[in-house]
Length: 285
Image (cartoon, rainbow, N blue to C red):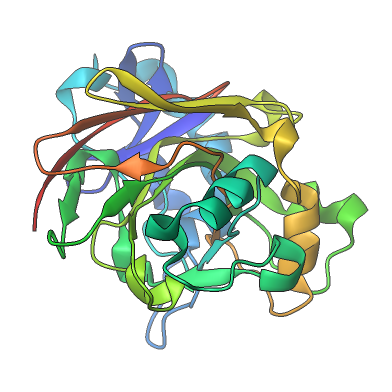
């Protein structure tokens, strides 16, 4: 199943080139009062929502996907986890290019660990990317994104995929410079998630998915998740050894080689196999 959020927060079931408005399915969500949960309530109750979507979708209003503004499929992630240099060829290119490493020590992911992006950086493709620090290089990075569906701590690798609610395309936008990654990658709109959430039954093997990105029609990155140094299960195991993962947490799994600059006016087209294509426009903040 492919679920999107669009417009003013409507819930949609993506059906080919159309979207069915199944917002009524949100009525099954439990009511909360302050203090509100620190996780995403929709993702935490996704099984109930999916069951209700199946019951009402045949009668739901339909419109073309092209006519709606797509939001991030996750509204309230507790954290956005990111895997740096998780493809060997990307690690090689960063080490070889001073415009990428800026004299920072670039260690393999096993030593570098993960980093966090601010949740305020998250947008859907319809919002576009608003670039800051235009006197510096801003780069695109296309990634397979994983949405955690079940709370877990110290999750064993063999059980890791049972904690996944679904998959999406992620764009980890980066300002190049000497500062810590979390600062340079956390401006508003520098984490794009979409175009929808694809449930795990449609992606039984996240470790063999083609992914690519083009800018203004020119292909910049192209690889396959089989080249990840740490795959999805290994990343979940590793992350959960440091902190509890909650429903709605988003994990960006890393980008392949070919990262390059973007500027206002560019149109990005990002693709991940079994998920689809996400088009994102770039402007100045």
